[in-house]
Image (cartoon, rainbow, N blue to C red; front, side):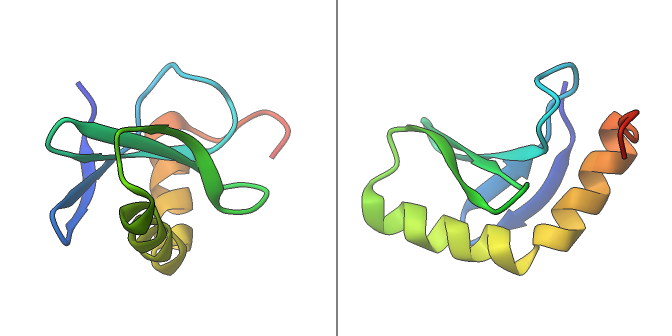
Length: 83
């Protein structure tokens, strides 16, 4: 089970363990999901159902809390060897 790192504007932000190494965050609302890379820049990695206007709003939230999400990612996953 993945902990919730933030809830805002109807979106839930989570980080999953044992996934790929590149730092990222998952965003959920109802049956929709998106994944955003947190490094080297914040960008959409995958989208499962969110309309384009929502993706812009979500990216704004991810950018606003980017440092927080990176910190939480490192705390949850642990520092990677190359960091």
